[in-house]
Length: 184
Image (cartoon, rainbow, N blue to C red):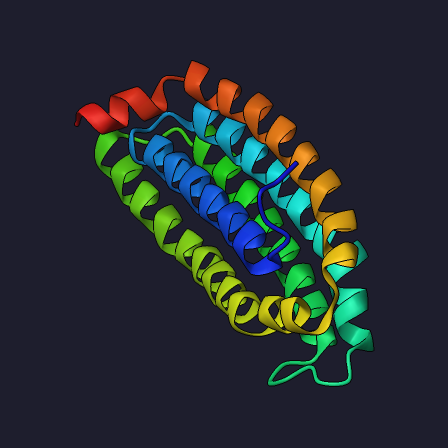
């Protein structure tokens, strides 16, 4: 069982894990290890989808019922999730194109830079979305829902998250990007 029924604490930890995995993906791209970068991005996507689905199924509907939603309405979070999915699809397509390109070293380096610049849009959008959740959605839910409801949804989610994270982190560690990148 998780030690907390505080949604902000639980979801912020998920955000931190997702941010770290995305950074490892970018390190793989920087090293020109595109197959590994794709595998890491796949791991990111699995965890992100689990996280997003939890919010879409449990948090956003409850938030929509609250009398005081604060600065941002529930529909904003749903729209942002859809936009993140679109940006993720673009990122996957751009990575596929980069990995299939037959370029000399100089042009490959320049294309890697251009790819990372494009990923900046995705990363920035996710950061702003996370900030809104951590400043609006999550504190409002923590303040306006009871501990029993939060425990009922958090405990199964955390169990599934930890299992999924463990599987995906094994995949990432086996790729040896983490060890290589930390040595440079």
